[in-house]
Image (cartoon, rainbow, N blue to C red; front, top):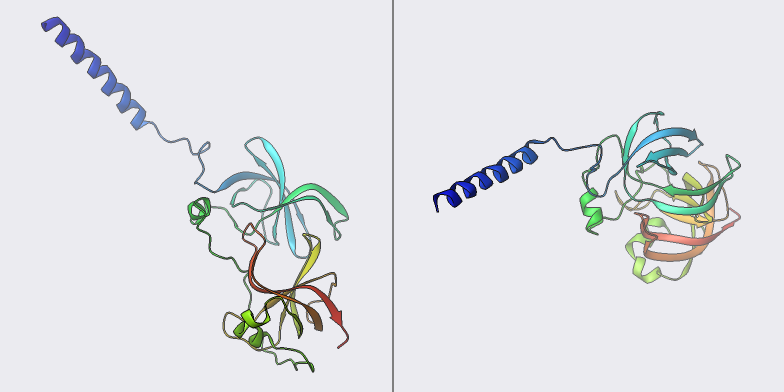
Length: 238
């Protein structure tokens, strides 16, 4: 009986020692990323007017992502969240076709804190960073102001409208369309900017008229969410 007790004590001692060693080992941060974060090394950077295209190496595989233009250097370690994958995407400005590229909104040199919420599906609608400009644009006859659209968006959902405003930002050739931001001086502190999708490519600063269909709470995935958007718009004469 005494011999069996000694053997049991010895076995427990070995088990406890093994667990202690495991607990004292430093975590391998190279192998484990924060949940939801992609961690990669920048291998190549190509800039255009609006975007930075990054060739990344992630877990031994190369891939391309596109982010809003920013100062990112070759050799940096970056963290990013899921992006919108585009197959056979052609950048007109680069005159180059990417076999596949991910359009990413969230990128950082540190793990992104809200990544776990993204994993759990608790995502907040994401909006680009925009500033309200000091402008007053005359509304065309039969047209509607941006402020009115936001105030009564349910009323106009699915209907065709004419809007007029100054172009503040243009993103070309995403998902087969151009994404144009306009403002007319109306709207509140958050609902002053209207996104219009169109085949048209205006210049920033242009005053433009567009006729298109209103869509409310439009979610394209990967964080491309719009409370209000005018789609398939045609440019009209001013």
